[in-house]
Image (cartoon, rainbow, N blue to C red; front, top):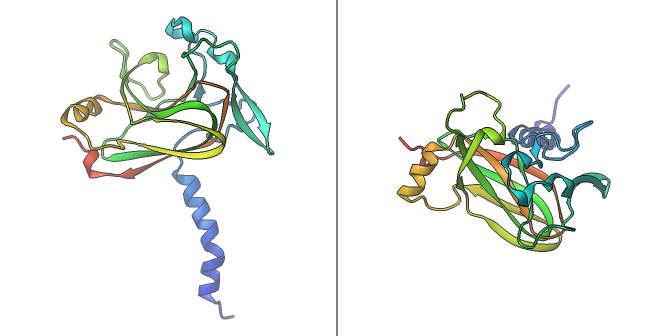
Length: 205
C-alpha cells in the first residue's frame, strides 16, 4: 500500500501541534477544571500574611461554569476601595537561561496581571514544594493594567523589558515565579498558560 505522506502530514500536524502545545504549559490547572478541586494549583487564601485587606480574600474568588467551561469569578462586592481581590498560581521553579511567557483569558476589571518573583524567606530550608508563606516577593515583571467588558487574551512575560544591571541583580536571587492577578472590580479569568523559552539574556553568570 502506498501512503500519501503529504496528506498524512496534514492530518497528523494538528494532533502533534496540539500535543506540543499541551506539553509546553508548565502551569498546574490553568483551565480550573481539576476534579474535586477547581482551584487546585492556585492561592486565594492570604490570611497567613496577616494583612487585614486580604483576610477575607478567598470569599471573593470562586469557580463557575460559563459557556460550558469552568471560569474563575472575582466578586468585588464589599471589598475596600483600592484593595482589590487577588490570586496567584502555586510557585513555579525559575530557571536562569529562560524567559517565561503567560497567556491569560480575562474580562472585567480594572485588572492587573504580571509575574511575581520570589526567594526563600530567611530561615526556611529549601525544598521542592514551597508555599507562598515560605517565600518573599522580590521582583515583579512589567504589569498589564487594563479593563475589558468582553473576554480578551492578555500576554505578558518575564523579563518583558530590557534588563538594567539592578534588575539583573534582583533576578539572580529569584527562585520561583507565580502568575499574579489583582482584580479591582468584578471580573473573570480562564485558560491560563505559562511557557518557557530559552533566552541567553536571562543567564546572569
